Length: 145
Length: 148
Image 1 (cartoon, each protein chain N blue to C red):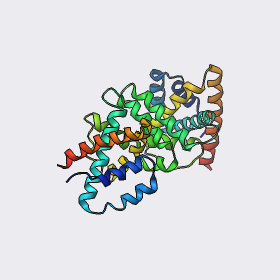
Image 2 (tube, each protein chain N blue to C red):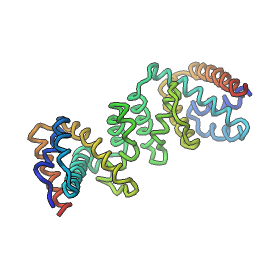
Image 3 (spheres, each protein chain N blue to C red):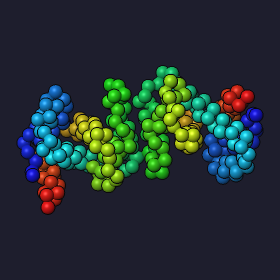
Image 4 (tube, each protein chain N blue to C red):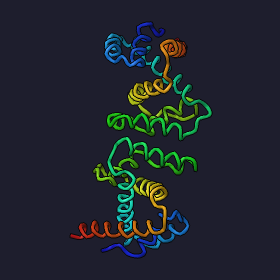
């Protein structure tokens, strides 16, 4: 199993802010293997984005500020994003933070909510977004193989 | 039962960031006086929170609690407060009611927020005296309502 071009296009539409196109493409990912591959792409993108935004030298306070900024964007974001869990998922990318107690659905929801904010901070051009997704796809393919 | 001088003294030590003084003073309050002390602390927090944030904004509350946590995390994870409890305490202080919070986590949040707000909002001994007087009056009103 590997990530398909259609799955990359689906995530690209979300990260480029094209919500309608993203939702349309997302609706076409129906089979269990396709959903698994798309999930792997989302998680790989989250890890790649966290590495770029934070990395080894970041301290806990930077993560606290980032999650607070995302939650402060709307009351819905405040409600949906549990701050401590979001901070732990971010730190788990580059530390030995154990997040095995966090449910799969909660993880998935938080990856989807946090990823656009991580990407937004990067202010990618179209080419840079393609490069970013290329790296993420490569990582996801390694996980799926 | 109105606020006592001993309760005001303990809160004064907290707002003066004199932890060495505050701990024995709070301990000496005992089981009888602690509930009144907590009302006094809530009153002071409400007055300081409204001074800092005259108009309520969810974003302000989220970012402020994060900033308090960030400063405390510099001293280690053990000094962190529960962010959701902290936000609910701040909202309550600003007149936005919410669900009851676990007592232990709530107290940690109140102490942390009082420490941060007093550092930024109280600049002179006179301002501290005024805040304590106003907080005592407010807490006395709340306690009188509870006694009715």
